[in-house]
Image (cartoon, rainbow over all chains, first blue to last red; front, side, top):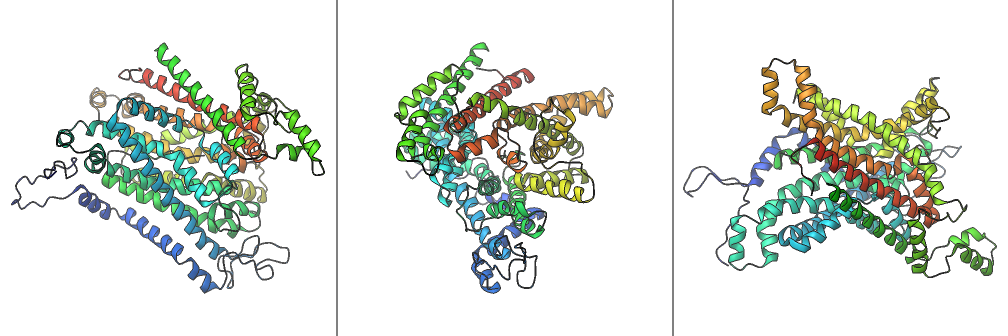
Length: 319
Length: 319
């Protein structure tokens, strides 16, 4: 157990064979991070993401400053005599919605849902996909045959239709949204990981680990996984905005969260009926959603250039 | 080759069968209130039981499933619960709408995406490249419903205010009745889909073109003294289109399976809208019908993609 080969990611063969060399060896992470830090657009996007995160965390603070709880309806001050939303004003900085609620406060609370679902559902997707991909690629044989077939099946499902059917049965909730998204998206991650593992498991260091009597679980997660993780991280970064859009879409179709929870997709669905009379009602939640997904995509683009520069594709999205 | 096609079709049929089991299972997992809705508000339990009996919903789920399967193998998908219309008829009405939507948009996004991809690849890192990439990411980050509403606002509402009634806000006019009206009513949904999807193609074409432009045969073509335009459009583009064709097949398959969101935004009664409505009413025969058509479209499209792949690239062998 004391002899460990392949500790460093195999994709980097440090030029420093002798430890006394003056050339400092850099891990693939340090190199990638250096490249990423020089990418100005990616750094600006990261800043925007952090800002949105802060707004999400500080949502109760926004409510306290404006004095408007997110679900409080101001039927007198927040609606015009005709019952229409009020435009931005001193009282309501971004205007009000169709029930006279403060848009600014609801957008801040909506950020929590988007980010939470984006991160948690992506995490779930990645964990499922990595485990299936590792097992499938490492063991091969009938296990691989079955799992690869399963991946094919999941990839050929009409996602939105089945998601709608599922949610209509279970009833909309945050947990259901996350599970549904995770269940339908792990397959692409599994496919990527499997493809990598197939070639990595033939390397000498894996053979020697096996010869040393390491157990398969250890070989998969300690020896092989570090060599796949860069690609997985790139994929995950690009998956977050796709998940955020998917969550908003489900909400838009009335399958996201039960009202009166504030979430961007639901707000936009309510606002659609008012696009001729109250532009702010649709413009501000729409801008919030678009800024978030755009920031994640630009950042993800930079991460890919830094860590996995050979690939240059966008993920497919669900329309 | 023939064996390969047959095996793929059998695989597809297996997936479709699994899906019918899954949808049936999901449906009977929770108590449905189809009979209660149909019988009306003042219905006595006796009437409800009668309605249930007439629809065959009082029989055990597995018996209903076997009946369904037996009929489906003869091309009969049953009748919808609410209007007693054959499901095949419902599908036949919705299908042309979705196909018009998907194919029209496909033409647009291929033109947009491939052309801007070529422009980007010919002068990488130029101003044109950067702005096209920026545009692509912008639309890629946009949720489809948001873009749909935005186009409705700009091209329908604002133009109508300005006295220009160019783009109707939705609805469907059959091609056979009025080809011009058909196209006019579909322009906005086409544009929505095309702008969203073109991004993927810009990226794909760009990276694939960049690879191909570095190949020896391109240098040979230039060395022969061919004009640059001929080199790019004849020699390079042909070699670069393989991944684009793959993606195209996948996207068209997915779209024909239901453009749920865009159909909802523009109130087009295509497959996606039909499915959403059916799911809302727990209309099982229609749900199963749409899911079957949708998955079949994906399966067939994937098969065609693989065949096209083998035809375009002689190195690919099907097995």
